[in-house]
Amino acid sequence: MQIREFCDVQAKGRSLYVFINAIRNQPIQCENQYCKGEIFFCRVLKKDIPNLEKLAAQCHVTLTVTEISSLTGKLRKYRHRFGIPLGILISIALLFYYSNIITMIEIQGNTTIPESVILAQLEQNGIRTGAWIADLDTASCETDLRVNIPGISWAGIRNSGNHMIVQITEERPVPDLLHERLPCHIIARYDAQITNVRIYSGQLMHLLRDGVAKGEILVSGIIHAEDGKIYYRHALGNITGIYTQSITLTEPFQISQTDLTGKTIYQKWLQIFNLKIPLRLSKPDYAEFRTNEYYTPFCFLNHVLPCGILHKTTQELQSSVITRTEEEAKLALHTAIIRYEKNMLADVEIKDCQKSYHTDQNGITCDLIYTVEGEIGMPSEFFIPETEAETTKAEQ
Figure (spheres, rainbow, N blue to C red):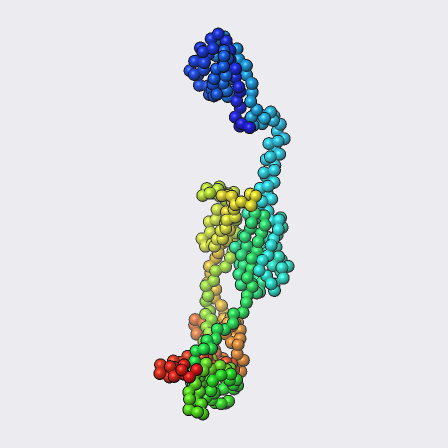
């Protein structure tokens, strides 16, 4: 079926060739021209029929016009039926709307973390069924998933049309890499007194209650056999000892800090390619501020469109210098000591702690001397002389 409207024309009369020459002098698109007997046949656009009829009247030629079926002609019959284009517009609007709201949330990668816990956190960030995708800050939600749900090491959120996909990676303990084929000693990491020994490979060089210096060999990887041969091993074992650790922590009386004032301005732009059309005319005039900007494209039938909503959040900041009293500084110093013990001494047992406080015009300083019990050994590789290595290889 043709798209444009054409008509088949038959012309007959005494001045037929005068009529044909007149057509050639007029801006009329005339196709399929031929003569058969005393009749001229051609095909012209429907819009040129009135001009063709005027020429035929001037040349005393009779025309027979037959309209050809076309798509434009069929659609023209419905041009006064406004329900059809209105229905098409409503259908497109509904398709666009349902392409940009969340109809399903799929979580991938979780094995130990319940799906309900992840969905609850997503809902707190506004990601739920029926939410408008263009208003979601997925980058912020990814951060909140990692921070608020223990066990998540990575999170990614993307949408495929109206299908929101949340991919997570759970934390997995990484085993220590042991180079068991490399010969090594176990040496002391600190100056300590040995309290417990477990040897799996190698030769013990010290007994319980012995004092050892930092760097001294605790378990040797060189074994002298009774037959006079020397064997090289990768020393393995757990050696526990009592040792001391020192640290100095300071809290000044004056501290500079930056806080949020609570004033926030939200801005939106309709972005079409590189053109930005503001949807909110508010403009921040803060001296100090922080901003968060993210872009969410529109989708239509699972295809990303070159347009979307650009969001920008601006929060006002205020810097100030706070002068603390001696009691407040000491309380902050006590909190820092607890934090240090929790983070740095979590793997050892604290036997004793000696604290010495010093106060000057700038702040409070605390000298800490911890007596702890924990692992004191660490591996230390050594090189075998080339001649001995060849001999050992030949014997093996």
